Amino acid sequence: MKYLKFLIVGIIFGIILVKSEAVSWYRIYEMFMFESFHMYGIIGTAVGTGIILLLITKKLKLKNTEGSLMSVPPKDRGLVRYLLGGSIFGLGWALSGACPGPMYILVGTGVFSMLIVIFAAIIGTYFYGVIKDKLPH
Image 1 (cartoon, rainbow, N blue to C red):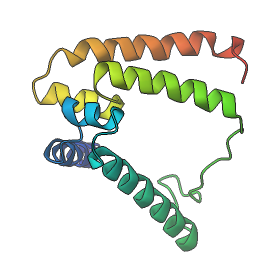
Image 2: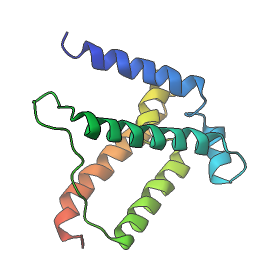
Image 3: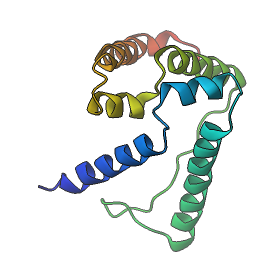
Image 4: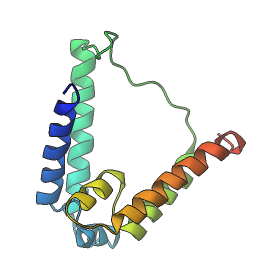
């Protein structure tokens, strides 16, 4: 029962993404072909909302469930790693027609072929974990 709130938020988020057509393969295709602003508007709104919520969190000094102040840990800078990682992520997104969140939403809407994509994503994540220490970070 303590995870019920997360399930409810996930269901609401899934409904919003389906209704806004953010999980539509055609909308994703339009975005990658630079034919429509629809997906860029959704992504831009999400980024803007995240920035505002992080600023509010810092200003009000909100705490997480463990009682410590919420903060974003600093990340190592590096152009090549972000270009390479972003390109691989974008290629997977373009080939499958879905990024990680919508993959599960599409399964929920009846697109069971996405289970193959989810399996491939899990294998890819596992593979990265195995070779992570050998990569230049």
